Image 1 (cartoon, rainbow, N blue to C red):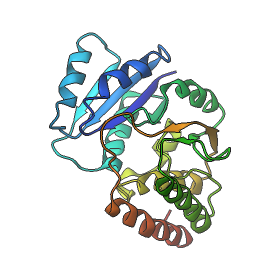
Image 2 (cartoon, helix red, strand yellow):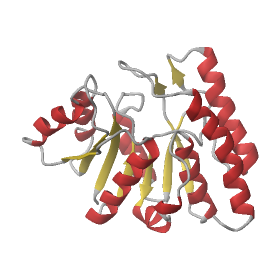
Image 3 (cartoon, helix red, strand yellow):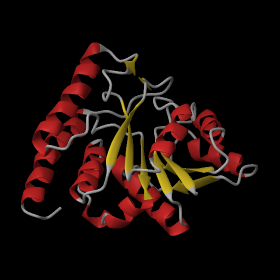
Length: 237
């Protein structure tokens, strides 16, 4: 069983060493791929130092900041080329608890996509202001209503794909780049008939650093959900 945890980074020097260590401690079969967008704070340089003593750490440095979706696609291609069977998406800021990795991995033995869900059993979010919580929960409800996809947390970014899912998705057809990328990957997986399950997690707002959320990302997500739905109706997904 080959497991790869993909972590995109941009200016995560305060978190990167600790998150890599925490992930690797969960399972000896786990490897980590950092996809760094040439962080000016030196994130990639810290990873390169770690690589000297840890063969399970991999690094791809992109020349410029190109967005979350493209970072994950870069990681997916690496994972498929290198033969990994289970491929995770995970944030660098400890909002996703590394201790939940094995729980998602266990569920992935019987599913094609496992989502670490904030909303499958109530609302499990810590340290968010009420306005951010309402926005996130409302976005999830919005996606469910438009796409009819039965996923309680379609915007979540902590998940595990079996490689057969990624092999079935044409990356050059992916439309999204921001957080709507998460919705699109879930939706394309669902449209192809793969089995999706949600595992409850507790999401904790980042310990240090700044959120990458922006108004542009929110606008893209609102528009993209409708576009994906119409494409599915037209048989293009």
